[in-house]
Image (cartoon, rainbow, N blue to C red; front, side, top):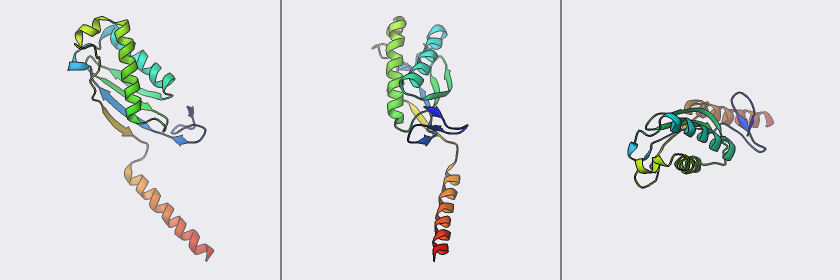
Length: 147
């Protein structure tokens, strides 16, 4: 993923800014994301998001019982795919490195299935509507000039 400007990213075929804010929690909302576990989780999330998925981590906060992540990802990746990969791989690696976590979350699954996601953009709905209307007017003006 290449940075196209201060606002947009680009791939060979697209310019984009697909920002997502994710929030998720450990199983039973246990306060297990502390100290070395929290630090290692941050490292893993950045590694997984950037190296595996080609996303850019903009903000990341790990508290004792939940995680906030703001990423910009290529448009080929659906939000469900992004979070599934990050939660799945981070859980597997954390459980390998910190086996004591298995007993804290009961059935050996670190994360709940649930998560929150919200899109984050550079422009609001009103700006997009105004832009589209201006394009329509430009099209009408061009048609009148041709007549």
